[in-house]
Structure formats: structure tokens, C-alpha cells
Amino acid sequence: MRFWVLSGSEEHWVRALEENKWGVGSNLKKRWDKLSPGDVLAFYVKAPVSGIIGFGIVERIAEENIPYWQEEVESSQVIWPFRWYFRIEHLCEKSWKENKVFIKDLRIEIRAGLNSLTNKEAISSLLTRANVAWKIDVSRLMAPEIVKIAKVEEKPVRVHDKIRDMIRDIGEVDNWIAEIEYPIEDLGDLDVVWRRVPTGNPTYVFEVQIGGDIFQALVKLKHAFDEWNSIPFLVIDKKLREKARGIIGGAFHQIKDKIRIVTTEEIEELHNIQSKDKQIKDRLSLPFANIP
Image (cartoon, rainbow, N blue to C red):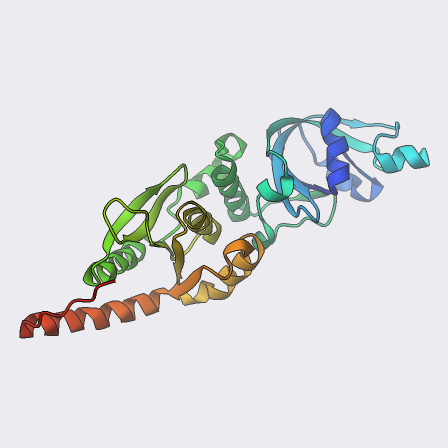
């Protein structure tokens, strides 16, 4: 089972989805020859959508000489004769621009009408993002080796949990109601939230991303901002800072000026300073407390 990315304009896709078929010209015939029934297809729409809008499975391959797309009909010439029909596995709701899956940071090839995708990590990240964005079961689109990658814990547990717990401790020392693994509707859990009152919505929300897919963490942070007007914090390894900024500036530009990026080193430094401060105050029996 191969994985392919089909790339075309929005107008081209609207027509393609009328009969669930795609086609390429003679310049891509060698790729077309490698297509097989059962191969997985990702539907990529070019700018201004710029993202994946759905998935399909190859059902039948055919060479046709009848004009189908607008350019072919207008010129009375078949431009893309090497075609195939597919079964739609999932198609996101319109508007496509708002509901597409962002893939720019995954460096997936999208220049041609038919692009082979062999990088297992990229496939896993793409399908995981679709699962989060569209709430669909993508396991049926995964080859066994991809399933194994998707099931691997993407973040080193010991380091992740250590930083998460430090963030909770920092909040508690400053008299916030700090909770870990706070449930967020249909998206799993936020790593840490700080609240002012027990029944209130989170004021600050934190996602710790040591490795793996930053996109998923940002989806949860944006949801918290949209739902509760929480101030979002992305806590990452310093090596991921520029990558995170690039993703935020693209798919998450709506919260670009709201989200705060903090490194794990900064959290550790603050935790150490705060711990020493508290130890000294406790030893001296000083009744100092920081009230949010």
C-alpha cells in the first residue's frame, strides 16, 4: 500500500469530486504506472486553501481520452489522460480554507499533481493531525509500520512529566489552583492549567512539547483561548523554538500575539529559584505569600 498526495487548485478539486477521479499528464505517467488499487490518497488544495481537505482510496485505474476538467473542455483536448477513480474515506466540511489540515512544516511534496509520500513520520503526523482536526479514525489509512510509529509515545515521558509537574508547582506556590492533565473537549488533556477559583475557567493553560508534533499541542492551546479566553503557553525544548514560531505564524496566526513560548530550561530555572525562595521563607517562618 502506497501513500500519495494529489495536488491541485480548488476549481480542479471541485470538478474532480463530482465523479471522484483524478488525472495527470504524460510527464507523470511513470508515477501513474505505480498506482495500485488500495493505495491511500491525500487531497491537497493549493493556495488560498493550502492544506489537506480529505483522504481517499484508489479503486480503479484508467486511461481516458474524453475531456473532463474545464481546461480540457475549453480546448477540446485531453490534458490529463492518465486517470484513476477513488473512494472517499473522509472529506472535510467547507470552507476548506478554515477546516483544512496544515502540512507546510512537514515538508511534504505538493508541487506535482501526483506526489509519492514515503516518509513514515510525515505520514503519521499528517494522519494524527487529521484525527485531531476532524475527529476521525485514521487507523484504516495506515500501513502496519505507520501504526507502530503512531502508537509510539512522541514525547520522552520522564522529561515531559518532570517539566509538567514543575509548572504545577510554580502555580501552587503563587497561590493558583494548578491542575495537571486537565480535560479539554474532544482533544484529550491540557498538560497544566492555572485557575483563580475552583469553579472558574483556566486563566493560564500550558502544553509541554519535548518532541513529536507541535501542531497537536497548538490545537489544544488555541481551543482553550477560543473557549475560555485563557492565556496559552507552549513549553518546548529551545531547539524547537523557531519551528514553533513558524507553525504559529502560519496555521495559528490568530493567536500569534497571544501565545507565549517558554523553554524547558526557563521553567527549570524559575522552579529552582522559587523552590529556594520558599525554603528560605519556610526556614525563617516568614509569612510572605504571593497573591495572584
